[in-house]
Length: 180
Image 1 (cartoon, rainbow, N blue to C red):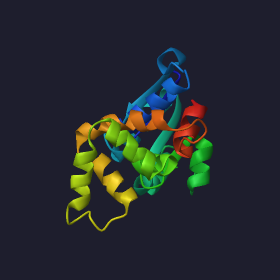
Image 2 (cartoon, rainbow, N blue to C red; image 1 turned 60 degrees about the horizontal axis):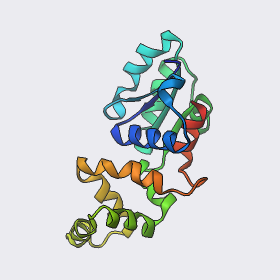
Image 3 (cartoon, rainbow, N blue to C red; image 1 turned 180 degrees about the vertical axis):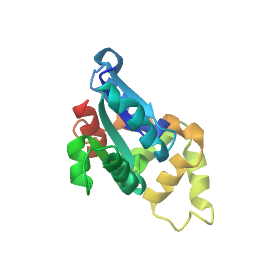
Image 4 (spheres, rainbow, N blue to C red; image 1 turned 90 degrees about the horizontal axis):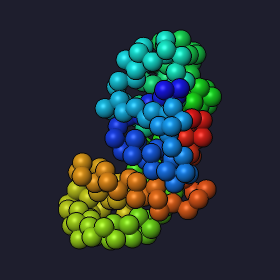
């Protein structure tokens, strides 16, 4: 392994791998591993494990982990007073809200709903939109909740990536893969 892309969870792994496939890249043969931290909290352990090996480290996190990741990178000796721009210079990119949010914005609500319909889940989505806790939310927020409400819906992440027009990929996803 020459490069490790550290990501929060399985959906991030699926998205990076889907974009790599779409870009006709074979990450494994290139020596690039996408490493799930099982949530945003495992960064310090992976930095301590991988940094001494000389593996190039890159990362992708959600906005709610941005400050925590900046502190972990600082503690690992990779800079001080890191802001988003400095994190990106190191190869660590932040998704505003989360990757699902980025994908919905990149595709647009209508295209995302088409993907759901193609998978035969439009009724399930419509049921969610009628629930009292979700019916007043924006369609965007309802879609985001749909994707994050059940672990089985992680399968949508590669489908959403595949549905993107070339050049319309969410910036954090595109940039972390470009650096690998």
